[in-house]
Structure formats: C-alpha cells, structure tokens
Amino acid sequence: AAVVVAAATAARGGAAPQIALVPADVIESNVPTSNVQGFATRLLDGEPSNRANGGCPGGNGVGVLVFDLKDVYQLTRSRFRSWDDSDNVERYRILARLDMTQAWTQLLAWRSTPDDSFGESTLAGCAARYVRLEMAYDDCCLASEFELYGFLQPAQPTPIPTQSPTPAIVPATPTTQPTPIPT
Image (cartoon, rainbow, N blue to C red; front, side, top):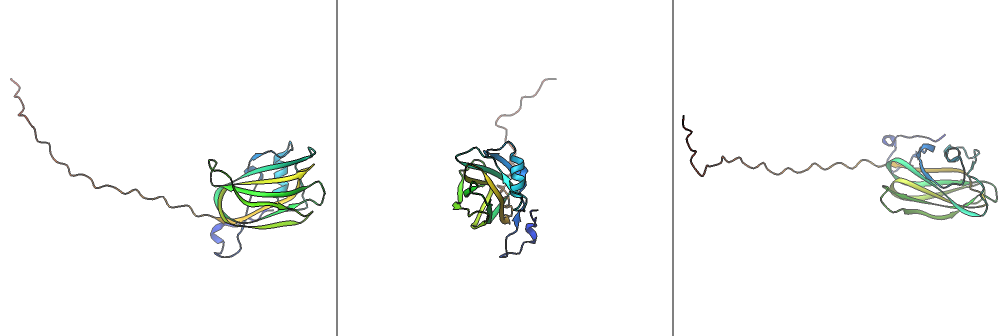
C-alpha cells in the first residue's frame, strides 16, 4: 500500500515522501477500459505484481490519467513500472499544472519503459496540484505501478490589506440659516 508521510515530519533536504494517490483522485481518463477505477487501483496500490489492465483496443494509442492531488506539492521524483509483456505501455510522460485554467507543463519527456522494470525520474521540484500521466502503448494499455514523491507546499500567507487612515469627521457648516416653523 502507498506510504503516507505527513509533510510536517519530512526532514528538509531528506528524501521526499511518497504522495498517497488513490483511485478517487483520477478526475479524467481516456484509458480504453470500462473500469477506470479498477485500473487506477492496481496502478496505485504500491504492489507491482498487481498489474493494471487498461484494455486492449489494438493498434497504437495513448492512455491518459489526470490526478487531483487535492493540495499543491513540490514534486521531486516519479516511478513507473511497465508489464513484462511486449504489448505493454512502451513510453510514458508526466505533465503538471497548478490549476485547471493553466496549460500543462511537461515535467518528464517521453521515457521508454523496459519490460517489467521501474523507470525512476527526478522531477526538479515543480509545484503542482494536477498531474497528467500519458502512457503510449502498442495494442494494450498495460502497466504495473505509478508513484509520485514530493513535499506538501506550505500555503502562501494571505496578505493583510493595508488600511488607509480614517478621514477626520468634520462637522458640516450650514450654508443657510434654518427657517423657523410657525407655531
């Protein structure tokens, strides 16, 4: 299972903790399967022997999973493991963004995945809330494991608005004398 490490306990300069991704974090997918949650469960479970079968539509394709990390993280490292099958995910890449209005930024260019081995990559501390995993496959979208590592980014303090000085209250000076009301 994924290891959850509180950001407060992470030592500065030490190894980044694994970010606990769960299937519910998948907010977009075009993986060719009717069971995206099942595919994501096996891909994210921390157990490479639980292989994720994303479907076999035949031909070349690109399977996409978009994850909502729920908070902003400084991403430092990723791990991806393919199947030991010739029809598996052959290459993958990782993109990220802070919010849904931004364009995707490529964190990791297309990487080859040797059969049944982990591809481990440094991600240079990019801040992200949304992560897009693209998996290029031949015939079948098959993979074993995907992991992200990083630190929870501290919330930016909200600036306190500067207050302008309160203007002095000056009593109004009447310009005309009031007219007496007859009794």
